[in-house]
Length: 192
Image (cartoon, helix red, strand yellow):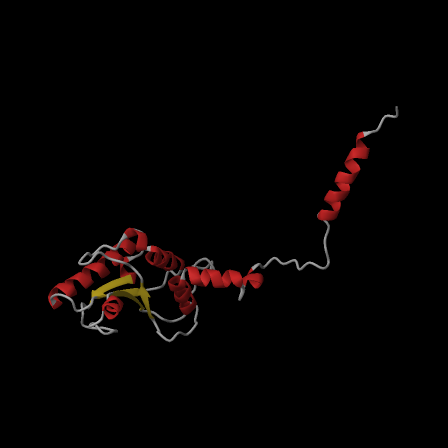
C-alpha cells in the first residue's frame, strides 16, 4: 500500500481558498459604501423609520422644505398629563442625538393644545409639556441657552377643533430652529 502525504489532501482546500479570495476585476470594490446606499433601498428604509430625524438633519444641512424651520415632535400624553408616555419618546431621543451632533443648534419647543377645557388650563398644560421636553434635553447634557420652551395653549390651532382629528392635530409640540443657517455636525467637522 502506498503512503499518501498530507499535501494531497490539502491541495484542493488551498485551491478553493485561493480562488475565493482572489481579486475579481468584474466586481466593484469601493471604500465608500455611501455611494452604494444613496438613493437605494437602504436609504428609503432609513427615511421611513425615522422621518422626523431624517427631515431635521436634511434641513440642518441645507435642504429646503415646505414647513420651513418648524418640525412637529410626535409624543403622546395621557389626557391632561404633562409627561409623555415613555414608549412614544423615540423622536425626542432622536432630537437629543441631533443636538449633540450639531453643537451650535438652538431650538424653541412650542407646546399647543386643542380647545377642550378652560383656556388658562390649556395654556399651563402646554407650557408644562414644553418644559418637560426642555428638561429632558438639559438633564442629558444639552446647554440651557440652546433650548427655549413656550406654551401657547389653544391660541394657535392648525386644524378644525370641532372634529376629533382636528383636535388631535392641534395637540402638538413644535420644534422651531432658532438659528436656521446651515449647521455642521461635530462628527463631520473635527475642528469643533
